[in-house]
Image (cartoon, rainbow, N blue to C red):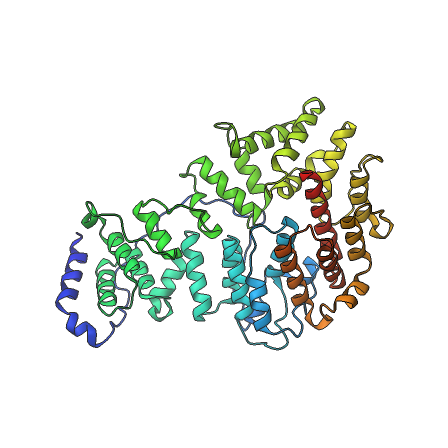
Length: 500
C-alpha cells in the first residue's frame, strides 16, 4: 500500500466516531498536479469545432451554428412548454433513419431561441446534451457545455460524464478541485483527488464518505482498488452493479477488469478509439458512431482503409467491399466497378451505413462512365447523398421505381406514384396543409414540437405505414423543412428497394 494511502486509511478508521459528527471539509490543493495520462488524439468529426464561452448568454439558446445556416427558424420552439419539449428532444433512437438522425442533430446543435414560455431555463440544453451523449456525440456535447459556461448541477454532471468518457477529464477535475461542492458525488471528488496525485486526501475522503454512507458500495470498492490495486491482487473480482455509470466504466477500464457482456452505450465507445486498441474494436466503435451521426463519414473512410481485412465475413466483408469500391472509383476502373458497386449495395444496404458510404464516395463519381445497371445503382447512392436536392445522376427510363425517386427530388408535384406508399409520399410532399388540416396535428406556434412528434411517430411505427409516412412528410413540409422531408422520403424508398 502507498504510505500516504495507508496512513489515511488508518487515520480514518481511528476517527470514525468523529467522522460521524460532521462531513469532511474539502482541502485546498497543496500538492502539485500529476500530469494526466496521455492518449492518442484523433479527429472525432469532419469539421473541428472551436468554441469560447460568452458572458450573459441564454443557456438554452447556445449552439454551434446559427439557425439560418442549417435551414431552421430561430423561433423553432415557439410557445411549446419546456415540459413537453424536453423528453422529445432527449430521445435518441438507434434504429431511426440516417436522414432523421441528421435532421435531429442539426436541430440539437443549432442556435435556437428558448421557448417563449420559459426564457431563463437550462432544461432544453440539458435535454440536448442527453441526446448528444446518448448518440455518442461527446465532442459536440462538450462544445455546447463550454459555450454555456454554466455551473448548474445538472449541467456540471453532464460535463463530468463527457470528460470521463472522452478521456478529457482534466479540465472538469481541476474545476472540481477548486470547488468540491460542484462534484456530482463524493466518488467524483475522490477520483479527481487521486488523479491530481493527492492520495492521502483521496483515501481520507473515501473512507469518511463510506463511514457516513454517502457513497455507493460499488463505487467504494472500485475506488479502493483504483487507489491501491496491490491490496486486491488475490481478491475476487469487484462488485458488479446493475447500473453502469461513466465513472464506474472508467474505473473498470483503469483496473483492467473485463467488460460486462452486452452492447456498450454509444458514449462509452470512445474508449475503443485509441490506437492502442485493436483494429476490429476501433472499426466496430466507429461504425456505430457513424450510424448515430456522432461522426461524419470521413471517420469511416479513415478506419476502413487502415489495412487489409484480417479475415472474411461480418465487419471484414464490409471493409473489403468498401476498399474495392473506393479503389475502383479512384482508378476509374469500370471493369471492376460494376461488381464492386453491386456488392456494396448488397453488403451495406441493411446496415444503416449506406447513407454514410454514399456521402463519403459522392465526390469520386465525376468522370466515371457506367453501364446501365451500374448507373441505376449509382443513382441510388446519389439520391441518398443529395440530402433532398436534385441529383445529376439519372436512372434508366424503364426503372419506374427509381424514376419516381428522381421525380420527387426534382418536383414532387409531377411524380407518378404506382404504389400506396408512393402515393402517400407524394401527398405528404405536395399537400401538406390539407393533410395537416385533416389531422389537426399542430400549429405554427408549436413548430418544433410538431416536428419532433412527427419524427418520433416515424421511429415508433416504422416506414411501412403509408398514412404515417404521409403525415410525417406533411408536418416537415409545413414547418419549412421540405428538403428534409424529401431526403427522408428518398431514404424510405431506397431502403424499400434495396430490401426487396
